[in-house]
Length: 620
Image (cartoon, rainbow, N blue to C red):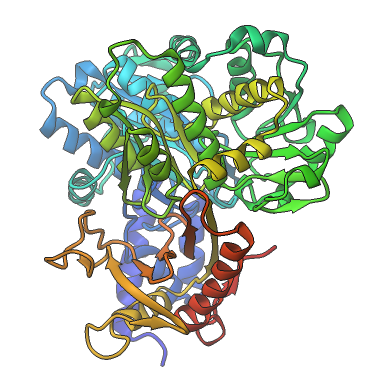
Protein backbone atom coordinates (compact mmCIF):
# COMPACT_ATOMS: atom_id res chain seq x y z
CA UNK A 1 0.00 0.00 0.00
CA UNK A 2 1.36 3.42 -0.93
CA UNK A 3 1.52 6.45 1.38
CA UNK A 4 -1.74 8.16 2.27
CA UNK A 5 -2.56 11.74 1.35
CA UNK A 6 -1.97 12.74 4.99
CA UNK A 7 1.44 11.05 4.93
CA UNK A 8 2.33 12.91 1.76
CA UNK A 9 1.23 16.24 3.27
CA UNK A 10 3.25 15.55 6.44
CA UNK A 11 6.31 14.62 4.38
CA UNK A 12 5.87 17.73 2.25
CA UNK A 13 5.58 19.96 5.33
CA UNK A 14 8.64 18.44 7.02
CA UNK A 15 10.62 18.68 3.81
CA UNK A 16 9.65 22.33 3.38
CA UNK A 17 10.65 23.10 6.99
CA UNK A 18 14.02 21.42 6.47
CA UNK A 19 14.70 23.26 3.22
CA UNK A 20 13.74 26.58 4.80
CA UNK A 21 15.96 26.03 7.87
CA UNK A 22 19.01 24.88 5.96
CA UNK A 23 21.42 27.11 4.05
CA UNK A 24 23.35 24.19 2.61
CA UNK A 25 22.43 24.02 -1.07
CA UNK A 26 23.54 20.40 -1.43
CA UNK A 27 21.38 19.05 1.40
CA UNK A 28 18.48 21.25 0.29
CA UNK A 29 18.67 19.65 -3.12
CA UNK A 30 18.70 16.14 -1.60
CA UNK A 31 15.42 16.79 0.23
CA UNK A 32 13.80 18.54 -2.73
CA UNK A 33 14.76 15.63 -5.01
CA UNK A 34 13.24 13.04 -2.65
CA UNK A 35 10.04 15.08 -2.42
CA UNK A 36 9.75 15.55 -6.18
CA UNK A 37 10.42 11.84 -6.80
CA UNK A 38 7.71 10.85 -4.32
CA UNK A 39 10.13 8.92 -2.10
CA UNK A 40 8.01 9.41 1.01
CA UNK A 41 9.37 6.44 2.96
CA UNK A 42 12.94 7.71 2.70
CA UNK A 43 11.79 11.23 3.55
CA UNK A 44 10.13 9.92 6.72
CA UNK A 45 13.27 7.96 7.63
CA UNK A 46 15.38 11.09 7.22
CA UNK A 47 13.01 13.61 8.81
CA UNK A 48 10.86 11.85 11.42
CA UNK A 49 13.57 10.87 13.89
CA UNK A 50 16.44 12.71 15.47
CA UNK A 51 20.03 11.72 16.23
CA UNK A 52 20.58 10.28 19.73
CA UNK A 53 23.70 9.86 21.85
CA UNK A 54 25.31 6.41 21.59
CA UNK A 55 28.59 5.04 22.98
CA UNK A 56 30.52 7.74 21.08
CA UNK A 57 28.16 10.72 20.95
CA UNK A 58 26.10 11.54 17.86
CA UNK A 59 27.15 9.54 14.80
CA UNK A 60 25.50 8.96 11.44
CA UNK A 61 25.96 9.31 7.69
CA UNK A 62 26.52 12.79 6.29
CA UNK A 63 23.57 14.03 4.28
CA UNK A 64 20.17 15.70 4.50
CA UNK A 65 17.73 14.92 7.31
CA UNK A 66 17.39 15.20 11.07
CA UNK A 67 18.90 11.75 11.65
CA UNK A 68 21.96 12.58 9.52
CA UNK A 69 25.06 14.64 10.26
CA UNK A 70 24.84 17.96 8.42
CA UNK A 71 25.13 21.71 8.91
CA UNK A 72 21.62 22.03 10.36
CA UNK A 73 21.75 19.12 12.82
CA UNK A 74 25.16 20.27 14.09
CA UNK A 75 23.82 23.81 14.61
CA UNK A 76 20.73 22.44 16.38
CA UNK A 77 22.86 20.16 18.57
CA UNK A 78 25.17 23.02 19.54
CA UNK A 79 22.23 25.29 20.34
CA UNK A 80 20.89 22.57 22.62
CA UNK A 81 24.27 22.20 24.31
CA UNK A 82 24.53 25.99 24.75
CA UNK A 83 21.12 26.03 26.42
CA UNK A 84 22.02 23.14 28.72
CA UNK A 85 25.43 24.55 29.69
CA UNK A 86 23.98 28.00 30.33
CA UNK A 87 21.60 26.42 32.85
CA UNK A 88 24.37 24.47 34.58
CA UNK A 89 27.31 26.90 34.64
CA UNK A 90 27.05 30.53 35.67
CA UNK A 91 30.61 31.09 34.38
CA UNK A 92 30.10 29.17 31.10
CA UNK A 93 30.91 32.11 28.82
CA UNK A 94 34.11 32.97 30.70
CA UNK A 95 35.46 29.41 31.07
CA UNK A 96 34.79 28.59 27.45
CA UNK A 97 34.26 25.61 25.18
CA UNK A 98 36.74 23.50 23.14
CA UNK A 99 36.13 22.55 19.48
CA UNK A 100 38.26 20.07 17.52
CA UNK A 101 37.84 18.19 14.26
CA UNK A 102 39.32 15.48 12.06
CA UNK A 103 39.73 15.42 8.25
CA UNK A 104 36.50 13.82 7.06
CA UNK A 105 34.46 15.32 4.24
CA UNK A 106 31.79 14.61 1.65
CA UNK A 107 31.35 16.57 -1.57
CA UNK A 108 27.76 15.42 -2.24
CA UNK A 109 26.45 17.03 0.96
CA UNK A 110 29.05 19.82 1.17
CA UNK A 111 29.97 18.56 4.63
CA UNK A 112 33.43 18.44 6.14
CA UNK A 113 34.56 18.07 9.72
CA UNK A 114 36.21 21.49 9.65
CA UNK A 115 33.08 23.19 8.30
CA UNK A 116 30.90 21.50 10.93
CA UNK A 117 33.40 22.53 13.61
CA UNK A 118 33.25 26.13 12.40
CA UNK A 119 29.46 26.08 12.66
CA UNK A 120 29.72 24.60 16.16
CA UNK A 121 32.01 27.47 17.13
CA UNK A 122 29.79 30.04 15.39
CA UNK A 123 26.73 29.15 17.50
CA UNK A 124 28.73 29.74 20.68
CA UNK A 125 30.70 32.79 19.53
CA UNK A 126 27.45 34.46 18.48
CA UNK A 127 26.31 34.04 22.09
CA UNK A 128 29.54 35.60 23.44
CA UNK A 129 31.10 32.34 24.61
CA UNK A 130 34.89 32.00 24.70
CA UNK A 131 35.73 29.26 22.16
CA UNK A 132 39.02 27.35 21.94
CA UNK A 133 38.98 26.39 18.25
CA UNK A 134 41.94 24.37 16.97
CA UNK A 135 43.44 25.94 13.85
CA UNK A 136 44.04 22.52 12.26
CA UNK A 137 42.92 18.93 12.65
CA UNK A 138 43.86 17.15 15.87
CA UNK A 139 43.58 13.68 17.40
CA UNK A 140 40.34 13.14 19.31
CA UNK A 141 42.25 12.81 22.66
CA UNK A 142 43.37 16.44 22.33
CA UNK A 143 39.82 17.68 22.96
CA UNK A 144 39.23 16.04 26.37
CA UNK A 145 42.81 16.88 27.29
CA UNK A 146 42.24 20.54 26.36
CA UNK A 147 38.95 20.69 28.28
CA UNK A 148 40.82 19.81 31.48
CA UNK A 149 43.96 21.84 30.81
CA UNK A 150 42.06 25.01 29.87
CA UNK A 151 39.35 24.65 32.52
CA UNK A 152 36.61 24.73 29.89
CA UNK A 153 33.08 23.61 30.76
CA UNK A 154 32.84 21.21 27.82
CA UNK A 155 34.13 20.37 24.35
CA UNK A 156 33.13 18.83 21.04
CA UNK A 157 35.14 16.75 18.59
CA UNK A 158 33.78 16.42 15.07
CA UNK A 159 34.74 12.89 14.04
CA UNK A 160 33.38 9.46 13.12
CA UNK A 161 36.63 7.79 14.17
CA UNK A 162 37.07 4.51 12.27
CA UNK A 163 33.62 4.44 10.65
CA UNK A 164 33.11 4.23 6.87
CA UNK A 165 33.89 7.34 4.84
CA UNK A 166 30.22 8.35 4.50
CA UNK A 167 29.86 8.94 8.25
CA UNK A 168 30.66 11.74 10.64
CA UNK A 169 29.98 12.43 14.29
CA UNK A 170 29.71 14.87 17.16
CA UNK A 171 31.45 13.73 20.35
CA UNK A 172 30.75 15.72 23.51
CA UNK A 173 33.03 15.98 26.55
CA UNK A 174 32.05 17.33 29.96
CA UNK A 175 34.16 19.58 32.21
CA UNK A 176 35.75 16.51 33.83
CA UNK A 177 37.39 15.57 30.51
CA UNK A 178 35.25 12.48 30.02
CA UNK A 179 32.55 11.88 27.41
CA UNK A 180 29.08 12.79 28.60
CA UNK A 181 26.91 10.10 30.19
CA UNK A 182 23.37 10.08 31.53
CA UNK A 183 21.65 12.30 32.54
CA UNK A 184 23.57 14.91 30.52
CA UNK A 185 22.96 13.20 27.16
CA UNK A 186 19.19 12.96 27.69
CA UNK A 187 18.91 16.51 28.98
CA UNK A 188 20.90 17.86 26.03
CA UNK A 189 18.57 16.06 23.60
CA UNK A 190 15.61 17.77 25.32
CA UNK A 191 17.32 21.13 24.94
CA UNK A 192 18.04 20.44 21.26
CA UNK A 193 14.35 19.77 20.65
CA UNK A 194 13.47 23.07 22.33
CA UNK A 195 15.54 25.19 19.93
CA UNK A 196 15.59 23.68 16.44
CA UNK A 197 15.27 27.01 14.61
CA UNK A 198 18.78 28.36 13.91
CA UNK A 199 19.54 31.52 15.88
CA UNK A 200 20.93 34.73 14.46
CA UNK A 201 24.63 34.21 13.92
CA UNK A 202 24.52 30.40 14.04
CA UNK A 203 25.31 30.18 10.32
CA UNK A 204 28.14 32.71 10.49
CA UNK A 205 31.22 30.51 9.93
CA UNK A 206 33.43 33.57 9.56
CA UNK A 207 33.14 34.29 13.31
CA UNK A 208 35.94 31.75 13.79
CA UNK A 209 38.25 34.11 11.88
CA UNK A 210 36.91 37.44 13.15
CA UNK A 211 35.67 37.07 16.74
CA UNK A 212 38.00 38.19 19.54
CA UNK A 213 36.46 35.42 21.66
CA UNK A 214 38.04 32.71 19.50
CA UNK A 215 41.39 31.40 20.71
CA UNK A 216 43.64 28.84 19.05
CA UNK A 217 44.89 26.36 21.72
CA UNK A 218 46.94 24.22 19.30
CA UNK A 219 50.51 25.06 20.36
CA UNK A 220 49.78 25.23 24.07
CA UNK A 221 47.87 21.94 24.12
CA UNK A 222 50.27 20.09 21.84
CA UNK A 223 53.31 21.18 23.88
CA UNK A 224 51.61 20.37 27.17
CA UNK A 225 50.36 16.99 25.93
CA UNK A 226 53.84 15.93 24.78
CA UNK A 227 55.34 17.05 28.08
CA UNK A 228 52.73 15.09 30.06
CA UNK A 229 53.42 12.08 27.88
CA UNK A 230 56.88 11.80 29.41
CA UNK A 231 55.23 10.87 32.75
CA UNK A 232 54.66 7.39 31.30
CA UNK A 233 58.13 7.18 29.70
CA UNK A 234 60.34 4.96 31.87
CA UNK A 235 63.33 4.08 29.65
CA UNK A 236 64.21 7.19 27.66
CA UNK A 237 67.96 6.41 27.50
CA UNK A 238 67.21 2.91 26.22
CA UNK A 239 64.85 4.39 23.62
CA UNK A 240 67.53 6.80 22.41
CA UNK A 241 69.98 3.95 21.85
CA UNK A 242 67.46 1.53 20.33
CA UNK A 243 68.10 -0.04 16.93
CA UNK A 244 64.52 -1.32 16.72
CA UNK A 245 62.62 0.21 13.79
CA UNK A 246 58.90 0.97 13.69
CA UNK A 247 56.44 1.63 10.87
CA UNK A 248 53.41 3.85 11.53
CA UNK A 249 50.27 4.25 9.48
CA UNK A 250 47.72 6.94 10.26
CA UNK A 251 45.05 5.45 7.94
CA UNK A 252 44.62 8.67 5.96
CA UNK A 253 43.70 10.50 9.16
CA UNK A 254 45.12 12.95 11.68
CA UNK A 255 47.75 10.83 13.44
CA UNK A 256 50.99 11.26 11.47
CA UNK A 257 52.34 14.55 12.87
CA UNK A 258 51.32 13.77 16.44
CA UNK A 259 52.75 10.23 16.56
CA UNK A 260 56.03 11.61 15.17
CA UNK A 261 56.12 14.15 18.03
CA UNK A 262 55.24 11.50 20.61
CA UNK A 263 58.14 9.29 19.51
CA UNK A 264 60.45 12.30 19.77
CA UNK A 265 59.17 12.99 23.30
CA UNK A 266 60.17 9.43 24.29
CA UNK A 267 63.64 9.81 22.76
CA UNK A 268 62.98 7.59 19.73
CA UNK A 269 63.89 8.14 16.13
CA UNK A 270 60.65 8.90 14.25
CA UNK A 271 58.68 5.88 13.02
CA UNK A 272 58.69 5.23 9.27
CA UNK A 273 55.40 6.51 7.83
CA UNK A 274 53.43 4.65 5.16
CA UNK A 275 53.64 7.26 2.37
CA UNK A 276 50.34 6.31 0.70
CA UNK A 277 48.46 6.69 4.03
CA UNK A 278 50.40 9.48 5.74
CA UNK A 279 48.33 12.46 4.60
CA UNK A 280 44.62 13.07 5.26
CA UNK A 281 42.25 11.66 2.64
CA UNK A 282 38.50 11.67 3.39
CA UNK A 283 37.99 8.88 0.84
CA UNK A 284 40.41 6.53 2.68
CA UNK A 285 41.44 5.49 -0.80
CA UNK A 286 43.91 2.69 0.01
CA UNK A 287 41.76 0.69 2.44
CA UNK A 288 38.44 -1.09 2.17
CA UNK A 289 37.48 0.38 5.54
CA UNK A 290 39.50 2.75 7.76
CA UNK A 291 39.38 0.48 10.80
CA UNK A 292 42.75 -0.98 11.89
CA UNK A 293 40.84 -3.47 14.05
CA UNK A 294 40.05 -5.40 10.85
CA UNK A 295 43.61 -6.74 10.94
CA UNK A 296 45.95 -7.77 8.16
CA UNK A 297 43.45 -7.06 5.37
CA UNK A 298 43.77 -3.31 6.06
CA UNK A 299 47.41 -3.38 7.25
CA UNK A 300 48.82 -4.71 3.98
CA UNK A 301 50.74 -1.57 2.98
CA UNK A 302 52.19 -1.21 6.47
CA UNK A 303 53.42 -4.79 6.67
CA UNK A 304 55.01 -4.74 3.24
CA UNK A 305 56.79 -1.47 4.02
CA UNK A 306 58.00 -2.89 7.33
CA UNK A 307 59.46 -5.91 5.55
CA UNK A 308 61.21 -3.62 3.07
CA UNK A 309 62.63 -1.41 5.84
CA UNK A 310 63.45 -4.29 8.24
CA UNK A 311 61.09 -2.83 10.85
CA UNK A 312 59.90 -5.39 13.39
CA UNK A 313 56.82 -3.59 14.71
CA UNK A 314 53.94 -1.82 12.98
CA UNK A 315 51.72 0.63 14.87
CA UNK A 316 48.47 1.76 13.25
CA UNK A 317 46.32 4.60 14.55
CA UNK A 318 42.77 4.92 13.28
CA UNK A 319 41.71 8.10 11.42
CA UNK A 320 41.11 10.19 14.56
CA UNK A 321 44.08 8.59 16.40
CA UNK A 322 42.20 7.42 19.46
CA UNK A 323 42.73 3.68 18.84
CA UNK A 324 45.77 1.54 18.13
CA UNK A 325 46.49 -1.70 16.27
CA UNK A 326 49.87 -3.44 16.54
CA UNK A 327 51.58 -6.08 14.40
CA UNK A 328 54.91 -7.74 15.08
CA UNK A 329 57.15 -9.74 12.78
CA UNK A 330 57.86 -13.25 14.05
CA UNK A 331 61.34 -14.29 13.03
CA UNK A 332 60.77 -17.87 14.12
CA UNK A 333 57.10 -18.75 14.56
CA UNK A 334 57.99 -21.98 16.40
CA UNK A 335 59.46 -19.96 19.23
CA UNK A 336 55.97 -18.55 19.83
CA UNK A 337 53.74 -21.62 19.97
CA UNK A 338 50.65 -19.82 21.26
CA UNK A 339 49.78 -17.30 18.56
CA UNK A 340 46.09 -16.56 19.03
CA UNK A 341 45.09 -13.70 16.80
CA UNK A 342 45.11 -13.32 13.01
CA UNK A 343 48.58 -14.33 11.81
CA UNK A 344 49.59 -14.64 8.19
CA UNK A 345 53.07 -15.59 7.11
CA UNK A 346 55.46 -14.18 9.69
CA UNK A 347 53.35 -11.32 11.07
CA UNK A 348 51.23 -11.45 14.20
CA UNK A 349 48.42 -8.91 14.48
CA UNK A 350 47.49 -8.60 18.14
CA UNK A 351 43.89 -8.46 19.31
CA UNK A 352 42.75 -5.66 21.62
CA UNK A 353 42.56 -8.13 24.50
CA UNK A 354 46.10 -9.37 23.86
CA UNK A 355 47.46 -5.81 23.74
CA UNK A 356 45.64 -5.10 27.01
CA UNK A 357 47.46 -8.02 28.65
CA UNK A 358 50.76 -6.51 27.51
CA UNK A 359 49.83 -2.95 28.53
CA UNK A 360 48.48 -4.12 31.89
CA UNK A 361 51.66 -6.04 32.68
CA UNK A 362 53.84 -3.14 31.50
CA UNK A 363 52.06 -0.32 33.31
CA UNK A 364 51.97 -2.27 36.58
CA UNK A 365 55.61 -3.38 36.29
CA UNK A 366 56.78 0.18 35.60
CA UNK A 367 54.66 1.54 38.46
CA UNK A 368 56.01 -1.10 40.84
CA UNK A 369 59.61 -0.33 39.88
CA UNK A 370 59.21 3.44 40.18
CA UNK A 371 56.64 3.82 42.97
CA UNK A 372 57.32 5.90 46.08
CA UNK A 373 58.09 3.90 49.22
CA UNK A 374 54.80 4.92 50.85
CA UNK A 375 52.66 3.97 47.84
CA UNK A 376 49.67 1.83 48.86
CA UNK A 377 48.76 -1.00 46.47
CA UNK A 378 45.18 -0.77 47.75
CA UNK A 379 44.84 2.62 46.06
CA UNK A 380 45.89 1.33 42.62
CA UNK A 381 43.27 0.55 39.95
CA UNK A 382 42.89 -0.76 36.42
CA UNK A 383 39.61 -0.80 34.49
CA UNK A 384 38.03 -2.48 31.49
CA UNK A 385 34.63 -2.60 29.85
CA UNK A 386 32.53 -5.62 30.74
CA UNK A 387 32.80 -7.16 27.23
CA UNK A 388 36.60 -7.03 27.35
CA UNK A 389 39.02 -9.73 28.53
CA UNK A 390 39.22 -10.47 32.26
CA UNK A 391 43.03 -10.65 32.10
CA UNK A 392 43.41 -7.45 34.15
CA UNK A 393 41.23 -9.01 36.84
CA UNK A 394 43.60 -12.01 36.96
CA UNK A 395 46.66 -9.74 37.22
CA UNK A 396 44.96 -7.65 39.92
CA UNK A 397 44.03 -10.72 42.01
CA UNK A 398 47.61 -11.98 41.99
CA UNK A 399 49.34 -8.62 42.46
CA UNK A 400 46.97 -7.04 44.96
CA UNK A 401 45.55 -3.97 43.21
CA UNK A 402 41.94 -3.24 42.27
CA UNK A 403 40.16 -4.06 39.04
CA UNK A 404 36.78 -2.65 38.00
CA UNK A 405 34.42 -3.15 35.06
CA UNK A 406 32.18 -0.62 33.34
CA UNK A 407 29.55 -0.69 30.64
CA UNK A 408 30.88 -0.78 27.04
CA UNK A 409 32.14 2.58 25.82
CA UNK A 410 34.98 4.76 27.06
CA UNK A 411 32.52 7.35 28.31
CA UNK A 412 31.87 5.04 31.27
CA UNK A 413 35.57 4.38 31.86
CA UNK A 414 36.47 8.09 31.71
CA UNK A 415 33.79 9.09 34.22
CA UNK A 416 34.72 6.31 36.65
CA UNK A 417 38.45 7.09 36.39
CA UNK A 418 37.77 10.77 37.20
CA UNK A 419 35.73 9.69 40.21
CA UNK A 420 38.56 7.44 41.44
CA UNK A 421 41.15 10.20 40.94
CA UNK A 422 38.99 12.68 42.85
CA UNK A 423 38.96 10.19 45.73
CA UNK A 424 42.73 9.92 45.91
CA UNK A 425 43.11 6.70 43.92
CA UNK A 426 45.73 5.98 41.26
CA UNK A 427 44.67 4.54 37.89
CA UNK A 428 47.42 2.96 35.82
CA UNK A 429 45.57 1.65 32.78
CA UNK A 430 42.13 1.10 31.25
CA UNK A 431 40.93 -0.45 28.02
CA UNK A 432 38.15 -1.72 25.81
CA UNK A 433 38.68 -4.76 23.61
CA UNK A 434 38.10 -2.80 20.39
CA UNK A 435 41.74 -1.59 20.53
CA UNK A 436 41.01 1.38 22.80
CA UNK A 437 43.68 2.03 25.48
CA UNK A 438 44.26 4.61 28.19
CA UNK A 439 47.83 4.60 29.56
CA UNK A 440 48.05 6.93 32.54
CA UNK A 441 45.43 9.57 33.27
CA UNK A 442 46.47 12.69 31.37
CA UNK A 443 43.63 11.94 28.94
CA UNK A 444 40.42 10.41 30.31
CA UNK A 445 39.61 8.71 27.04
CA UNK A 446 41.21 6.16 24.76
CA UNK A 447 44.33 7.53 23.11
CA UNK A 448 46.12 5.93 20.17
CA UNK A 449 49.00 8.42 20.18
CA UNK A 450 50.17 7.64 23.71
CA UNK A 451 49.46 3.91 23.27
CA UNK A 452 51.64 3.82 20.12
CA UNK A 453 54.71 5.22 21.85
CA UNK A 454 54.18 3.13 25.01
CA UNK A 455 54.10 -0.07 22.95
CA UNK A 456 57.28 1.11 21.19
CA UNK A 457 59.04 1.54 24.52
CA UNK A 458 57.77 -1.83 25.68
CA UNK A 459 59.06 -3.55 22.52
CA UNK A 460 62.43 -1.81 22.91
CA UNK A 461 62.76 -2.90 26.54
CA UNK A 462 61.78 -6.49 25.69
CA UNK A 463 64.31 -6.59 22.85
CA UNK A 464 66.96 -5.88 25.46
CA UNK A 465 65.66 -8.89 27.38
CA UNK A 466 65.83 -11.07 24.28
CA UNK A 467 62.04 -11.19 23.97
CA UNK A 468 59.40 -10.16 21.46
CA UNK A 469 55.97 -8.82 22.32
CA UNK A 470 54.43 -12.15 21.32
CA UNK A 471 56.81 -14.11 23.54
CA UNK A 472 56.10 -11.83 26.48
CA UNK A 473 52.38 -12.32 25.93
CA UNK A 474 52.86 -16.06 26.39
CA UNK A 475 54.81 -15.39 29.61
CA UNK A 476 51.93 -13.23 30.91
CA UNK A 477 49.36 -15.94 30.20
CA UNK A 478 51.59 -18.59 31.80
CA UNK A 479 51.89 -16.42 34.90
CA UNK A 480 48.29 -15.22 35.27
CA UNK A 481 46.30 -17.88 33.43
CA UNK A 482 45.30 -18.21 29.80
CA UNK A 483 42.48 -15.92 28.67
CA UNK A 484 41.34 -17.06 25.25
CA UNK A 485 38.85 -14.73 23.65
CA UNK A 486 37.17 -14.17 20.34
CA UNK A 487 35.21 -11.16 19.17
CA UNK A 488 33.42 -10.65 15.90
CA UNK A 489 30.17 -9.33 14.48
CA UNK A 490 27.33 -9.62 12.01
CA UNK A 491 25.95 -6.73 9.99
CA UNK A 492 22.22 -6.07 10.35
CA UNK A 493 20.59 -3.01 8.79
CA UNK A 494 17.03 -3.75 10.04
CA UNK A 495 16.37 -2.46 13.59
CA UNK A 496 13.23 -4.60 13.93
CA UNK A 497 15.27 -7.74 13.19
CA UNK A 498 17.76 -6.85 15.92
CA UNK A 499 14.93 -6.25 18.37
CA UNK A 500 13.29 -9.57 17.44
CA UNK A 501 16.54 -11.49 18.05
CA UNK A 502 17.00 -10.07 21.54
CA UNK A 503 13.31 -10.28 22.51
CA UNK A 504 13.38 -13.98 21.55
CA UNK A 505 16.25 -14.48 24.02
CA UNK A 506 14.24 -12.75 26.75
CA UNK A 507 11.25 -15.02 26.10
CA UNK A 508 13.09 -18.17 25.05
CA UNK A 509 11.25 -20.91 26.95
CA UNK A 510 8.17 -18.81 27.61
CA UNK A 511 7.34 -15.22 28.68
CA UNK A 512 10.24 -13.54 30.54
CA UNK A 513 12.28 -16.75 30.48
CA UNK A 514 15.92 -16.67 29.34
CA UNK A 515 17.65 -19.71 27.80
CA UNK A 516 18.86 -22.37 30.24
CA UNK A 517 21.26 -23.85 27.73
CA UNK A 518 22.81 -23.16 24.33
CA UNK A 519 23.04 -26.41 22.43
CA UNK A 520 25.05 -28.75 24.65
CA UNK A 521 26.26 -25.95 26.94
CA UNK A 522 24.41 -25.23 30.19
CA UNK A 523 23.96 -21.60 31.21
CA UNK A 524 24.75 -20.69 34.82
CA UNK A 525 23.79 -17.01 34.84
CA UNK A 526 22.20 -14.41 32.56
CA UNK A 527 22.69 -10.64 32.78
CA UNK A 528 20.60 -8.30 30.65
CA UNK A 529 21.91 -4.73 30.78
CA UNK A 530 19.00 -3.50 28.63
CA UNK A 531 16.40 -4.52 31.22
CA UNK A 532 18.56 -4.48 34.36
CA UNK A 533 18.15 -8.22 35.10
CA UNK A 534 20.97 -10.35 36.56
CA UNK A 535 20.24 -13.90 37.70
CA UNK A 536 23.52 -14.07 39.66
CA UNK A 537 22.38 -11.37 42.10
CA UNK A 538 20.12 -12.13 45.07
CA UNK A 539 17.73 -9.33 44.08
CA UNK A 540 18.06 -10.26 40.37
CA UNK A 541 19.14 -6.70 39.56
CA UNK A 542 22.26 -5.79 37.56
CA UNK A 543 25.08 -4.08 39.44
CA UNK A 544 26.10 -2.26 36.26
CA UNK A 545 23.78 0.60 35.22
CA UNK A 546 20.79 -0.16 32.99
CA UNK A 547 21.28 0.98 29.38
CA UNK A 548 17.89 0.85 27.65
CA UNK A 549 19.17 2.55 24.50
CA UNK A 550 21.07 -0.54 23.32
CA UNK A 551 20.74 -4.33 23.43
CA UNK A 552 23.16 -6.34 25.58
CA UNK A 553 22.84 -9.79 27.15
CA UNK A 554 25.66 -11.73 28.83
CA UNK A 555 25.64 -15.49 29.42
CA UNK A 556 27.90 -17.20 31.95
CA UNK A 557 28.25 -20.91 31.14
CA UNK A 558 28.96 -23.78 33.50
CA UNK A 559 32.23 -24.48 31.69
CA UNK A 560 33.52 -21.03 32.69
CA UNK A 561 32.97 -19.26 29.39
CA UNK A 562 31.46 -15.78 29.45
CA UNK A 563 29.73 -14.67 26.22
CA UNK A 564 27.99 -11.40 25.41
CA UNK A 565 25.72 -10.41 22.55
CA UNK A 566 25.25 -6.67 22.03
CA UNK A 567 24.47 -4.07 19.42
CA UNK A 568 27.12 -1.56 18.38
CA UNK A 569 26.64 2.02 19.53
CA UNK A 570 28.13 3.42 16.31
CA UNK A 571 27.47 0.94 13.46
CA UNK A 572 24.74 -1.47 12.23
CA UNK A 573 26.32 -4.48 13.93
CA UNK A 574 25.41 -7.27 16.32
CA UNK A 575 28.65 -8.08 18.12
CA UNK A 576 29.57 -11.19 20.04
CA UNK A 577 32.29 -11.53 22.64
CA UNK A 578 33.35 -14.84 24.21
CA UNK A 579 36.21 -15.73 26.53
CA UNK A 580 37.48 -18.83 28.29
CA UNK A 581 39.55 -18.10 31.41
CA UNK A 582 41.87 -20.56 33.14
CA UNK A 583 43.80 -20.38 36.40
CA UNK A 584 47.61 -20.38 36.13
CA UNK A 585 48.84 -23.86 35.30
CA UNK A 586 45.37 -25.15 34.45
CA UNK A 587 44.15 -26.24 30.99
CA UNK A 588 46.23 -26.41 27.86
CA UNK A 589 45.62 -23.54 25.48
CA UNK A 590 44.57 -25.86 22.65
CA UNK A 591 41.83 -27.37 24.86
CA UNK A 592 40.48 -23.92 25.75
CA UNK A 593 40.54 -22.81 22.10
CA UNK A 594 38.66 -25.89 20.94
CA UNK A 595 36.01 -25.52 23.65
CA UNK A 596 35.61 -21.81 22.90
CA UNK A 597 35.17 -22.40 19.17
CA UNK A 598 32.48 -25.02 19.72
CA UNK A 599 30.61 -22.77 22.12
CA UNK A 600 30.73 -19.81 19.72
CA UNK A 601 29.31 -21.99 16.95
CA UNK A 602 26.47 -23.00 19.28
CA UNK A 603 25.91 -19.37 20.32
CA UNK A 604 25.65 -18.19 16.71
CA UNK A 605 23.51 -21.11 15.52
CA UNK A 606 21.06 -21.15 18.43
CA UNK A 607 20.80 -17.52 19.45
CA UNK A 608 21.61 -15.37 16.39
CA UNK A 609 20.39 -17.68 13.59
CA UNK A 610 22.17 -15.74 10.79
CA UNK A 611 20.47 -17.46 7.83
CA UNK A 612 16.98 -17.11 9.27
CA UNK A 613 17.50 -13.46 10.28
CA UNK A 614 19.37 -12.36 7.14
CA UNK A 615 22.54 -11.39 9.02
CA UNK A 616 25.70 -10.69 7.03
CA UNK A 617 28.88 -12.30 8.33
CA UNK A 618 31.89 -10.08 9.01
CA UNK A 619 33.97 -10.02 5.84
CA UNK A 620 37.42 -11.57 5.99
